[in-house]
Image (cartoon, rainbow over all chains, first blue to last red; front, side, top):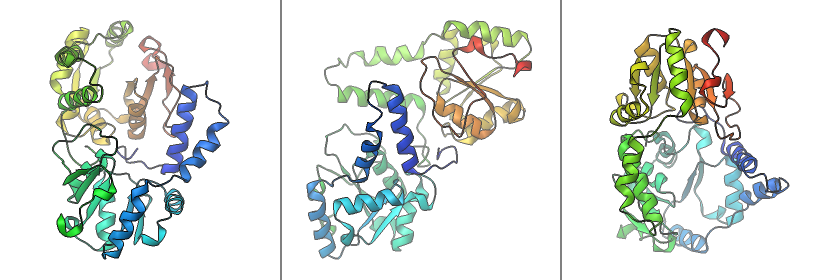
Length: 173
Length: 173
């Protein structure tokens, strides 16, 4: 949709994607629809997330989320993960009505936090998101928990790490 | 890549996608790599394609391909399908170095054939491509051979058809 210059928020896309999947697999009970959607609003964070963010925060690092999710989804996810008190900003693409990896989305970080791109350590488990971040000029880290093969060879992360605890300290990057 | 403002041609992306798939499924013999790539260059057309194009051509309709494929891939596909003599244009996104569904790609048709968007009957089996074409202003037909569920409810085709033979004649649209 973003490529076509159109925008539909991520919650609506999530509902539509689930409806498509349910239509393709009619043997699945459609009564699960509400439960599955609710589950997406209360996702746990991986166990290394809170400790790493707390340590970075204690060291004076500013922390932000930049997500394709809608503002309501992000508020619920932050609440479910119990990390609201650690974050300086929760940024949704909904502000610019286009999705990552469009550069306008990554610019939300540099604009909101008034920081040069090269000073941003961007961390994602999505290799395509790391590609977009590298293309924009962030120092990017790829959290590859499931040991996927590499992609986007021309847009390599600064480092590939197995989890957030392995993120190097700011002065060691 | 297009969302990030970058371009890599479709043949290279095809090679990389296959390499990713082979890396994810190590039990597949990597010696198949060359054979699989070659097969993609010599794809058959569905049996209804040549007859429908020949009839449209006989009625005076101009015919063109608009594809994300690289020029070499398109030349080989046209040759394999035996439809070269029926086509007025074979247009590759490689000219504008961005992929469908970016509007600049659909504009290759209106620019090259000097025809208004509303006069173009755009036919695709990819629902996302039909979305982009509808968004651009083409009269679009979705060839849904495998009876997939519908998507992009805000960007509906003029008609969904089971194959090319069901395409309505130009004056019956």
